Amino acid sequence: MRLSILIFDGLTTLDAIGGYEILARLPGMETEFVAAQRGIVAADTRRLGLAAETVAADAAAWTGGPFDAVLVDAPCSSTGTIRRHPDIAWLKRPADLTGLVALQRRLIERAITLTRPGGTIVFCTCSLEPEEGEQAVAGLLEDRPEVRRNPISPSELNGLSEFITPAGELRTLPCGWPDPDPRMAGLDGFYAVRLERT
Image 1 (cartoon, one colour):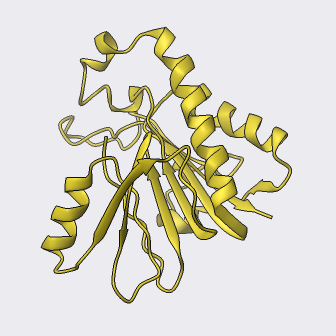
Image 2 (cartoon, one colour; image 1 turned 180 degrees about the vertical axis):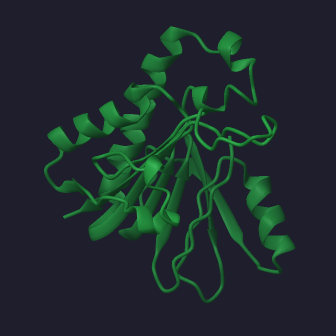
Image 3 (cartoon, one colour; image 1 turned 90 degrees about the vertical axis):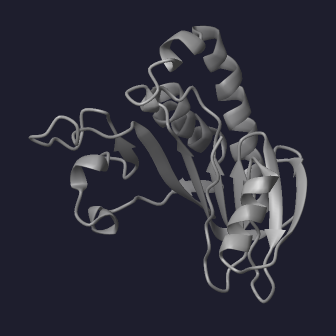
């Protein structure tokens, strides 16, 4: 699992990664971090010259907030990274998808309850599977009328409109980013959506 940190000056943020979370409060900031590995938070904050107090908890059950923003960097099949990690094709089984989709739904449901009205939820995976991206969000929006999609615009990606779906979601594919030098071509498959709790 990887660590993603979202910092919004003056906003309270929560970054929920995987099935576990680590919260780190930085002095003078209303910022909370959540990470899969406690040591990464400690090492990064030390490297940045910051002090952090960390607490480990289950992201699907932890109570707190409300937060202005929540990032759910969900555990997934990782099929979007297969070009760099070809072993994924042998390590992951079709049956794994069912459990991962269920966990992702629990995490995003929890993120909704942790987000204040008007707040932002970003859900992302490094998966090519629509069940872990577009289909998951479509089902969520159908079931949760208090959540709406807040479309991403190409201007937010320096005009890279090929990575924005018609619905305003971010979708990259390994075939994207062509380059004459094949060693420099391609990128990971990735999905992200920005949601707003109304």
